[in-house]
Image 1 (cartoon, helix red, strand yellow):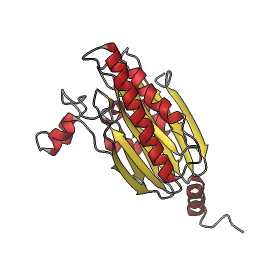
Image 2: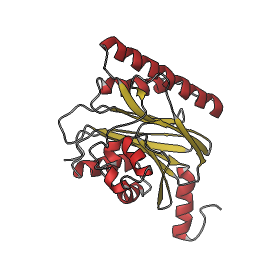
Image 3: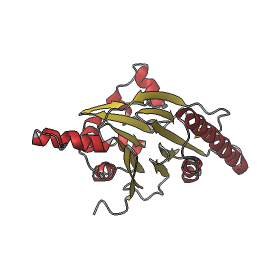
Image 4: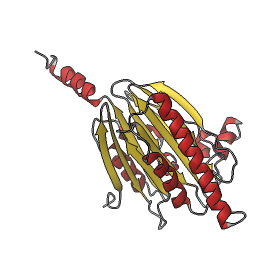
Length: 269
């Protein structure tokens, strides 16, 4: 069965319910993806050890491990500063590890992180792992890929459709590590509405499934969206590692609203 071998878990805390799933893909290669699923911290992340680079599995695990040990109960400002600080420290450690191996060795990973407090979120990222927001039936991409093909798309040299299958589609222009002196992170912020679902994923998913299918698979009030996405990528014969983390906001309110919609009356006395 395709679902065999999918590493998955789900968690719930406060207004957030989240699920995560990862698989090495159909090729016989190690899984260099890693994820963080911590609604209790209000932090979620996906990291993809840079393809073709040495120690990609070590790099992604280093980044996720740095975020995993954060302290709960931080304010929104404290949490944002802490995530930046920990990613910068991981960046320095990966560069030091590469230097230890000798000239020309890269130890690097992409990362996309979502932090949430109450109904506000911030997204930080470097590389081509992505974040999306599903609101109703509309899927919006939050992140912009730091990649060579994205730059080519923006320059009008190739189309979005051509980018996914371009021979240089795996060339990223930012990463944690990669021998770059200073870590560069982009940031976007937003406000959540009841029923919103966020998706974090590696390019094994986003380059395999079109966004129309991602939106369809993300729909539905259940805890298996991440596994459903990874299974669909495996059915599509994805050769890359594939990872998805889904984050649902205010599920209790959503269920109440749907119950009223179905029955035509409130459950309240």
